[in-house]
Image (cartoon, rainbow, N blue to C red; front, side, top):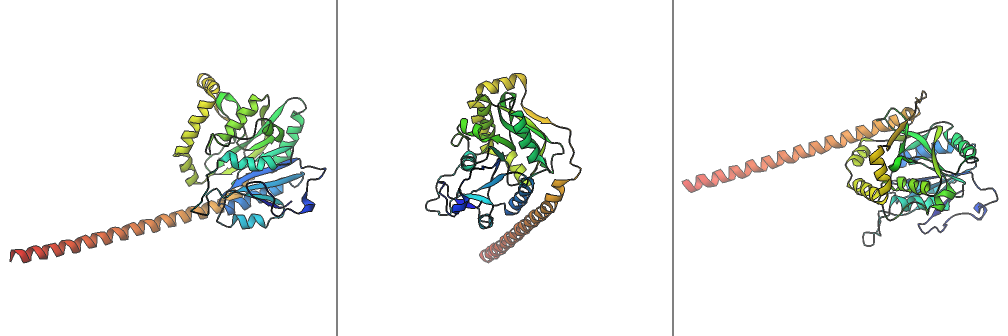
Amino acid sequence: MKGALSAGGTATNRAASDAPTLTSPLVSIVLGTYNRLELLIKTIDNVRTESRELNSELIVIDGGSTDGSIEWLSSQTDIVTIIQHNRGRDPESPGPRRSWGYFMNLGFKIAQGKYVLMVSDDCILLPGSLRRGTEQFERLSRKARIGGLAFYFRNWPDEENYYVQRTLGGKLMVNHGLFLRRALEDVGWAEEDYYKFYKADGDLCLKIWERGYKILEADSCYIEHYMDNGELVRVQNNRTQMEDAERYRSKWKYHTQVTRIKKNMGKVYCEFKDASQQAEHCFREYRNRTIKGQESTELTSDQAQEQKAACQESQSMEVTKTLDKSTQGDQS
């Protein structure tokens, strides 16, 4: 299926033969992206491979990329592409900045799958994870009301161990993994207006718990999330993150109190090592090249600063000489 949708959800190039059939996909893979073409291609290649055995669809929401991502996505015949120019290309009418929840809901709402896989544009699934996840969802749903399955993940290369996370109240949340689409609809989708970027995923999961669903760990389902140094610094020193976290705690006051008492929020690790080193093979060359580019940029910047300082010093010396000559002339 191929498509390019506007933010309003109107199809612009979907063929009549692509209309919904009696056989809906089992899983819809939904991810957002912005100006990360090289990583996006790695992620798309990976999810294509991992969903090959499944009846699936692939939905990408692009925030108005300028690095060729939109052109590349538009040429992919198996991707439904939604374009929402969040940064605004027209300086005279840029439009409002939209939240993470708004973007993800664009994909969630048009998804036709029974399950929705939520991943990022810098992630890869380890072999067999998606198939095992959907099989577990089907099996567990016969005995309980399951709203989501959290896949174990790690931030490569900074973290060695894989984990899922418990959010406020000790409730398991989905950072990356599967949702029951009906559960997303039951809770009114992700929050679009309350958070700017962070914590909307945790909020979505707490709404799912409140609705009577459970979120469980997905056994033997793993995701590698690429984390570069710049992203790590942004996360650690981000005012938006702190503001969204305060909103999150304020909204879910009871769960916040439970966590303060029981201290039951945090990472839940598993015993697993990826002997095949999928992340190393996928991301190492890109990381090395990125680091070299950053070092080159920093060196160029340092050289420019040195040249500027030398120029200023030279100008200062010239001014001093001129003043000295002027003073000597006055004295004579």
